[in-house]
Image (tube, rainbow, N blue to C red; front, side, top):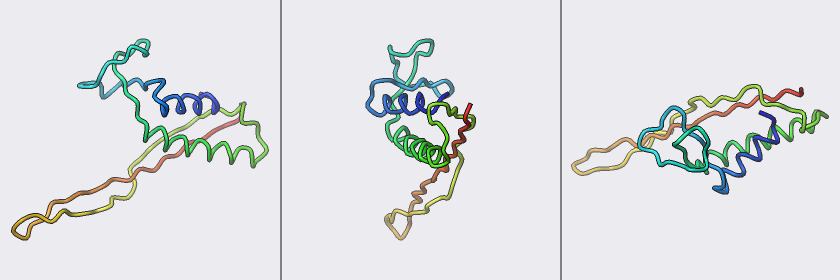
Amino acid sequence: MSLTKAIGLLEQVESKEMPVAFRRHKLKVGHRSELQGFPTGSYPVRTAKAYLGVLHNLQGNIEFKGLDPERVKIIHAAGYAGRTVKDYYPRAFGRSSPNFHQLVHIEVVGKEV
């Protein structure tokens, strides 16, 4: 997908105009009539905002290198597990319950075509 098209799509998701189709984890998810070919979907606003930040960073890097942002295609995008932030809730009788938060690293590679 081209960079400008991806940014436009994620801005629509962030403003809840266009849902994202769920292709794999689709049980117990609401149906969306706006989707064509996929019955289930949602509006992942926080995820769209995080990916928009990464894509705007990629666009800035492209402009800094002197490439044309209109001709850039995203050739690779991946998210993988990062560091685990460990936190504990105190409970009764001297016990505690874990409350771990998994951070995520996002990488996006663009190429001028």
